[in-house]
Length: 457
Image (cartoon, rainbow, N blue to C red; front, side, top):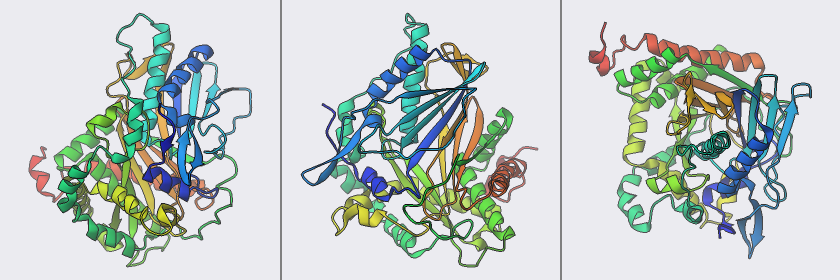
């Protein structure tokens, strides 16, 4: 029996910090060529959600402890035709009474769009794409029931009970302890430094609405050749693509603030970077949160030389990986549970914790056995054209950026706070980030970095 499930520390932190002004909602927009068969789609989602039970779970209190129980309501598919008013507003999600996941399907003459909205307490980005993958495979199976290659991945729902263990027992925690001690200095830095908002503003009252109407969203897609060249440039510079993108996001934010005379010598620009900490065992766990967060801080003076900035970001991310410092945040949450007020007291914050969030979901559907059409997945009678993912906005944080690669093309999705940023502001920032990525391509062989010896002219 999967339920009831004790609430995990990460989930508890998110729920404690959730509020109308800054909800922890996440959503994904999937655009398809072709129109879905309605019964097949509804069946495929029923199967997918049955395999990932947290998406429909509700919170309850038992003996003073908050737990998950099996939800009383299934996910309902809302079919919206082209002739109907098309609202993009993200509704409040009720984790206690209603189904906390919403599905909207928009239909055109020869296209369809699936909007999948859920709460971050239920899954991270990798978990969301576990469900989306299952949906695509199950939908395709109904058109080719005899195709033995269309199989749903094995899952072990009982592993949800140990999801907070992060694949580590006490002996492994002890073995990691010497390396994790390096991270204590980082914790001190995190607490001592005060990051700045991209645009200075007052934190909104908890009960004020996030926005009226549609959320602020933008996307930018790079061509296949640009995407391939970005990876080649990162390899040539002996850094990861993630390092390169973090550097370029920091530079874009710095330039954006400088143009508005908002830059001060001691202004820390802080990028929150989610880190997937799944182990091999977690491949069999249904969708959930197995994620941590690290923070990259830089002063304006550290943005003057882009090559040195890239090297410092790569060095810091390398230190985090080598010493497994992504486990510091989960450890802190466990420690907070032992203190007065517990995790809720530590998690609920009315100050700016980060300037922006940048999440790199990496390559989508890399191991999915579905036929391809021009490099894009065909599932039955539809072809998946593009994917966008949008993360939550926290107090003082004006934007969250998500990057993902699909069909060989890198795509950036931005969620911005419309109470603070205008559409022109958001477009300017997105254009700066995209231009920085392109500048990285052009400067790949012009760098003073030691990897110059790899360049060929």
